[in-house]
Length: 274
Image 1: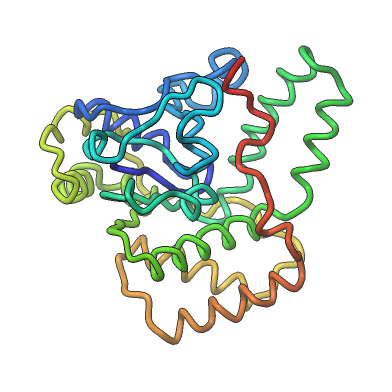
Image 2: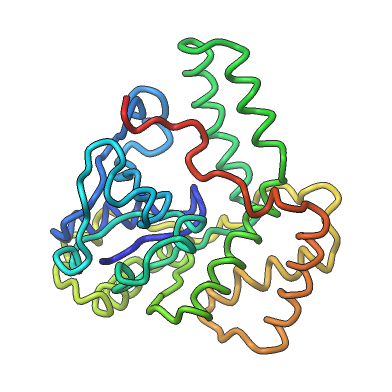
């Protein structure tokens, strides 16, 4: 299967739209659940998500409600979105090709805040203030920039152990140079209809990393986060020395935030059965 991964708000939906435009069969719907009403504004082109976004493994496949099973051999040319926490749970049989998108770490938090505001306004009217407040408390457990780092670190560690084929593409690079990026990635995927996908990308140069610097973030960690994003934006190799520095930061964050960094749930109160 062609798996599209990354953090939330990193460009995963855009990649799903691009693959669909290129006539790749996609697993997932444009607006799951109530999203066509609640958060359409965050992504008018559609999200194309399913329960598989939490991982393709025993808890999601077969579907615990419908019993539907996604067979690996018959879906090798299909595309599905699986967020990073789900990737580390996904069975290796489904990892034919993986496209990972990474957005600048300073822009991730503000983008998530805008999405959460849309969700909160919707749930305030449908479920009430107590429900909304519980969601806000849950989000505050770990800062967004730390979440960004921990997720990409876990993905890099997973791919280094299980060695599935993966391409990491900076979201900002895709927006700046859609034609060469899509031609290269689609060629690697074996997808031929790149001409149909290119017009969906609205080119934009610059403007990345404009979000506020998180409070309390040390210069050392900020430099490491910036380096991690820039490695993929500039298509540089990950050196052993830099990997060692990421390992050290990860160990420190694990001690600081404990199991919150590992146990955070990806679905965040979304009910796909509604």
